[in-house]
Image (cartoon, rainbow, N blue to C red; front, side, top):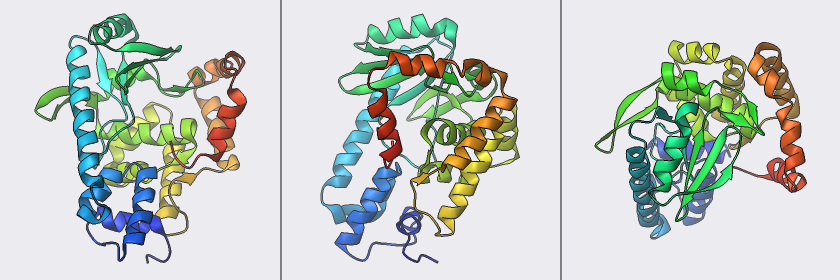
Length: 292
């Protein structure tokens, strides 16, 4: 069943069913785990095989949790929901993504600025803020190149709830919504499917997740995600898995035909390209990158 697929061996490690047979294999699987946002989960399974890497990653995770809780505290009274946040296993994210009701964006930005954050990238649907290397992205709508592919307000109002996080009550998307979000983000924005996306789908897929995907117009994305994850599960592809041009064309065409907001904001992509001087390098980077 395992064959030569590193992705399958990594999954077996994460599930406690396999251990690397050599230090060389442990390092190869560590790199595969890093690309798939499963590095902390992997290190917790293999222990000290890679020296002090587990200790270092746990320290990064602690800093991430501390910063997250401080941001959440700053957003008290703001209509928000942690976004692309709930995952079946712990991981150290490169940033903290938060959906914020448009009317509360000024309040959220001011509150974070009072705690030392500064705005580094203001865009139509996202404000990126930074403090000592920690990034908080405030989204009003999930989007790419200023094209909206999901309704952020509906996600906040209809598909989020209070959860307990490290002893603190925070607002976050439901697990069902996170399945739909993972699919839409992978297909429409990143064009890459990570093993973390597959874990979200495999563990939390339900009729409720399909219902959320249908309500928000991302059913096609969920189907494409599941197809990619099935290839990985059968050992026919490695993850991260790059979606092909035909898959993307089909997904975008279906989205444009069925989603009036997506269709109406498509022209924004041209404005985005014209306003960014390094577009060529950015496009090349997206075409050649192994992960994100």
